[in-house]
Image 1: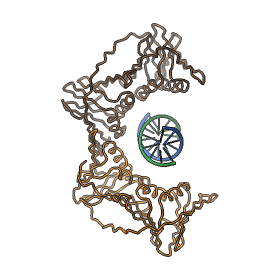
Image 2 (image 1 turned 120 degrees about the vertical axis):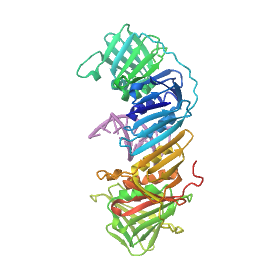
Image 3 (image 1 turned 180 degrees about the horizontal axis):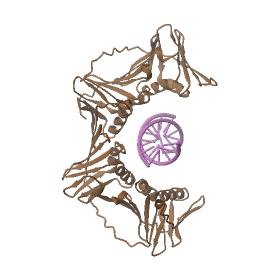
Amino acid sequence: MLEARLEQADNFKKVVEAIKDLVQDCNFDCNDSGIALQAMDNSHVALVSMSLKAEAFSPFRCDRNIALGINLSSLTKVLRAAQSSDILTLKAEDAPDVVNFTFESADSDRISEYDIKLMDIDQEHLGIPDTEYGAVVKMPSSEFLRICRDLSAISESVTIECTKEGVKFSSNGDIGNGAVTLRQHTDVDKPDKNVEISLTEPVSLTFSLKYLLNFCKATGLSSSVELSLSSEVPLLVDYTLGSNNGFLRFYLAPKIGDED
Amino acid sequence: MLEARLEQADNFKKVVEAIKDLVQDCNFDCNDSGIALQAMDNSHVALVSMSLKAEAFSPFRCDRNIALGINLSSLTKVLRAAQSSDILTLKAEDAPDVVNFTFESADSDRISEYDIKLMDIDQEHLGIPDTEYGAVVKMPSSEFLRICRDLSAISESVTIECTKEGVKFSSNGDIGNGAVTLRQHTDVDKPDKNVEISLTEPVSLTFSLKYLLNFCKATGLSSSVELSLSSEVPLLVDYTLGSNNGFLRFYLAPKIGDED
DNA sequence: TAGTCGCTTG
DNA sequence: CAAGCGACTA
């Protein structure tokens, strides 16, 4: 059986909120090391990969590997019933029909319990190659959100250009053009504001802002985000969850004809 | 003649907003003790009973008993013209064709006046038996709203089960099941958050969430709500208006086949 | 289907 | 105290 208790229901809510617009149904793969999820988005352009390590929970118990096939829209409905400071406990039998979510208010005077029916989902298991990226940019997640939002007023797509000078996000559209350039900088006092660039090769790739904005729903999960780019390889947008208790990663194939 | 002056138009607005979706036309029965209203909802499943005591007004004058038959949708339109902090005055002759609403801004710089035509409405007077309920639950009205909302994501109906341990709201639906349990608790520091249960007999009854959600439009009128239940008797959902100046009560017949 | 209002969260 | 998200209304 599976039993996983999370002190802050909020974290799980945010993870689900961040992926529910990309994926309809997916398996939550549970084993003794934690809970993981991998899925292509509905239009097969983006890929989501999430991991919540066992250490994120206390306690965490999972006797056998089980795949919980859940409809994310049902899950969202249920999670809406959780106050953010509630304690969330996830339970399932070894060959389950349902997964059980329990939300307890901190003072335990209110207990909500929900069962969600499970579904069989074809496990199109997606090997994600371990790529050596030409450029890795670490920046504040709020900054990334801001840039995607601002540039989406200009165009549907953004070109991310990484050189040793910095990273440049630019869009060209009908009303004009826009570009935001970040230079690498580190400040020990405000590590959250750091922009760090590791470059082995300059890159310039173009992506759909609609998807990037979707990924940005994970902003609340981590103060920083890591963008990894290489030519002709999907962009990796990586949010590391607090205390390194897991991650939420999005992959997005570049647009082919470059500029819009 | 009738003349009733209410310091806060807002309260009257909220009362009307809370019932306008249940009832199309109804009589406002005015006499020297105040203004009252009773009506079945359009589908004859729910009953609304409102009372605004004379003390809620200052001044209040009503020489003869009069029934003001008003179309609630017209009334709503007129009341929308009132700012929430306006002073509302309601006037009618003894054998009136119209009822007059006057809204004055607090500083009296703005006076709006509306006449609504009255209609003859068959006074199907509804004796509401004075029931001794098996269970009475007093809880924060916002909590009740929250529960009805959450569970309506699961099903059309909710079963309310009252035992000496607490009160349990549960729903079964296609995507799964949900239940919220509240234990009795009182905290003198936060009386608004109290959950108080008076039980003479355990009860379990099922109701339509659509109607309950409708009743919840009265949430803004009172920080707490009282649910009274007995087997095979309509549920009473009771919002006491501020300073005990009246009430807004809803009655809803239980669903027969219990579970959905 | 779009805009407004209220509620909840950070 | 301000912003974002969700619900309800027109």
